[in-house]
Amino acid sequence: MFDVGFSELVVIGIVALIVIGPERLPKVARTVGHLLGRAQRYVSDVKADINREIQLDELKKLQSQVTESARSIEESVKKEYEAARGAVETPAQATVAELQATARALESPAEASPAGQAAAAPAATDPAAQPKA
Image (cartoon, rainbow, N blue to C red; front, top):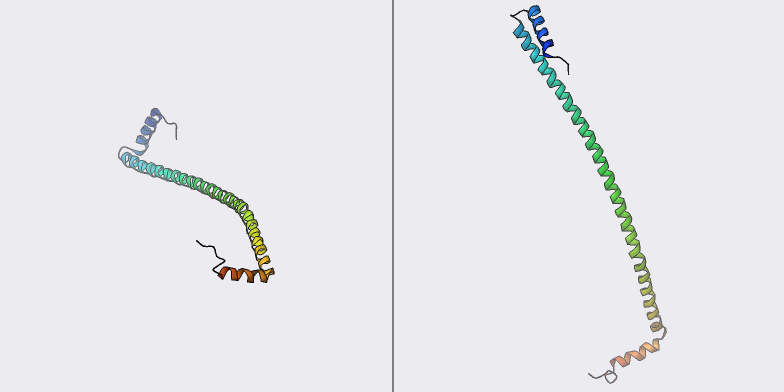
């Protein structure tokens, strides 16, 4: 903090001894020591507060980065889900439409010929028409 050597401290001590006197010098030295201790504690508290603020800012930045990464991942997962859904849903809908068309085609000839249905019904109930096992 200060560039004070041993010789400067000796000169300061001798001047203080002459100015203050030998009776009050111990009390003054003790008071100066307490004041310097308070000043050091105050400076260390300020440093600790500054460090906490810096760490808090770093944590906030990290939190925002993590949040942004999570959003990005969520968006990419949604896009992949929609792409996979589209890849599966389109062929499935085409297959369903094809099956429905086939079912309609099979139902249409049976409904068109009621005589064919009437002829098929007695054959099914006639025991002579059924194959023997």
